Length: 422
Ligand code: DSN
Image 1 (cartoon, rainbow, N blue to C red):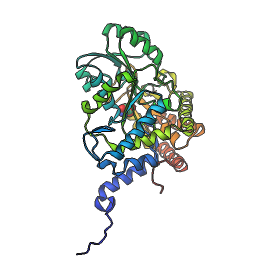
Image 2: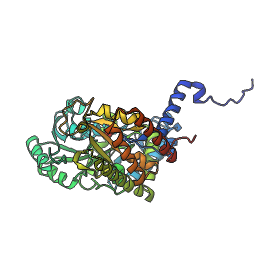
Image 3: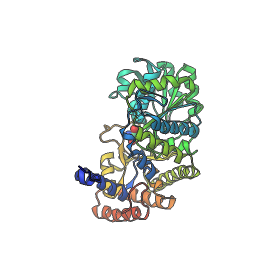
Image 4: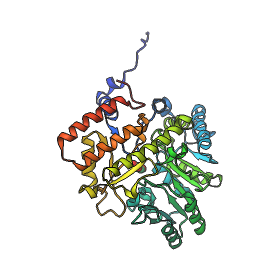
């Protein structure tokens, strides 16, 4: 019996519903100003790697020491990612297997300390992350977390209070890093504090990793013995995580990731990370990182010129945090109004917030994705003016419609990378 060569059915043929949802999401990403500061556009090359047959392969273990056979090519990919990560950030050791930044953090805790050990992290309403010891998270259920925050007046981290909290709590690890903190971290001071109490300094640089890679934020390398990050924010890689560390912690970190907290690594995602790390090592990326910060500073100034209050009075990084309570709004209402105008941001707590996280008194927004679209300070200034207009008249439907049309026109002029052209 002869076999007839058949082409395989496409996604649209096999599953038109999923295909349609993906197509709609492509259209949405292309037609809005994406300003959630933890989101970005991965390049077409990254997306191609993530959509590859590497998703088929089991590779528990590490390159050269796997529990399954047939790993010679995925080993090549993982080694490329590891070498590129070490070279880009200038570290002794890297682990590119964590499925996310949260997994990276949990793997470090598991590998380096014991359940019940004391840890010090940043408060969530000061900008910290759930895995830095928020009571609802496994980090706080498994380890004995205390927290530090920001000064009530300046809204900048109070390192004297961090030292006091460290002396009181005697942590094994001090976690420095945040999801909604617009200022530089002082890694030198944080290391002094960690040394003073005999703690390991762990920097969670998830938000700023791309800025660090591009030289646009001071690096934690040489100060924090262990550094965790996600790979899809300012780094513009695939959704995932990574740990970098001094050689002294390499084995404990690796064992914390596998077999401690994960099974088979996502080799297709690791391929995407390898591509991202190559892209992030270019001069073009350095210029991009500098532009992200310049754009964020322009955004901050434009918003403040329009009379809005920003937490800490500005930014050093890629993000700003607007206090919308001053406008009589909560974060949910403010982010809803912005979305109607085609600007996607997120509600967020601000320091010493009195509203629950489901509402929040702030809106968090950043410039990474707009900068990836090629926007510069002129466009960002106009975006800032639009944001201020919306927030100052959130219920003005006619104004919202007019601004939505202008946003659509800007999106058409600056196509998002990595998306199919239409
Ligand atoms: N959810 C991420 C963010 O938006 O900052 C943190 O993991």
